Length: 78
Image (cartoon, rainbow, N blue to C red; front, top):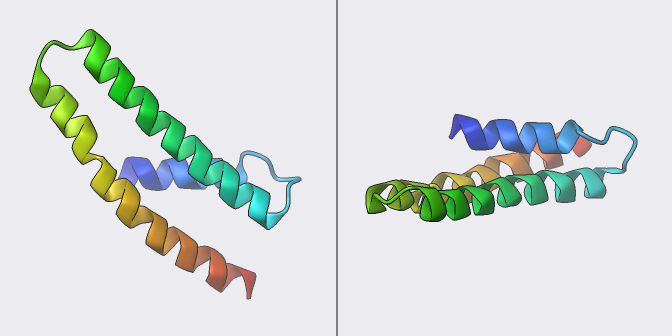
């Protein structure tokens, strides 16, 4: 969970000159891209299927983290 929270925070603040909707889009895109890259690397470079399973199971915290991230941004914007 901590890793995905960090991805969201870094993605949100990476382009400070953009508006709020662009920052949110960037945050989600960077988090998703890191997740996709992790699946690719796990499948290409590790023969153990358990490693790929752990990476695939990381979908759960990523999906759950989007909810508080959205709530935090709504609270901050009002």
